[in-house]
Image (cartoon, rainbow over all chains, first blue to last red; front, side, top):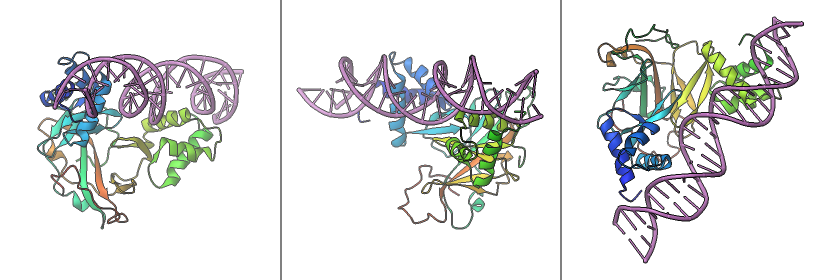
Length: 137
Length: 137
DNA sequence: ATAGATGCAAAGAGTTTGCATAGGT
DNA sequence: ACCTATGCAAACTCTTTGCATCTAT
């Protein structure tokens, strides 16, 4: 992408103003407020280009399509609420990740996704036991 | 799933004998050795049923279709080598995950995916700097 | 003016579902 | 014999691509 198009600006603005990672459809809906005829292919093409320019980051979720956020200033992880399905940023990081690795392995990055219920949703529904029962710190 | 069909046995055997998480197509190919006419819909249906029975686990990878493994006896995480694309089990877990959460949030599960190079691949290629540069422990 | 970016529609991947039939109990 | 699970094909969702047109430079 070499040109500053209105579509690209609208997509970036949507991500900047959202305050949380958005799905492709959320980006499309939001950016359409600025550029009416915006097509979904353009959203995909811009996200791909912005990703390779390291301007946006793709957040993968188990069993869902990815969400997108601006490349954050600080390293952070995410918390997915199983009740409201919102994704929250967690501005903390375990201190001892390298020690998890076998000898000789080189760690370059890490992703952590926490699952549970956010404060607003606690108690909203009967809590189904998590599938992953061990090691719940 | 209430019946012990040959298809289901073949799918479980494929996962049990593989020693690493498999993609749906890998499972199909492997289980076809036992049940020739096996269809991919049956693989999906059985994986879905086995998942809800907590007999298998789905391993999500960024930008790739998920892989599947038997539910492990121990809680573990994964390491994805960017050179050989193999996924390794990491039999360790940070001790202090709950403290990452904001007040009022309830943690039910967590996923950790480490990225880098495995011991066999270190030095095989020029190392491209990881995109996620901060907080590399 | 020119070449890159867009919008639309079609094409591809991956996954799910409807339905008649096979097969486990 | 009954009824669940299967195989096939069609449908669905998400994403990518071809192509004529538009637009930022």
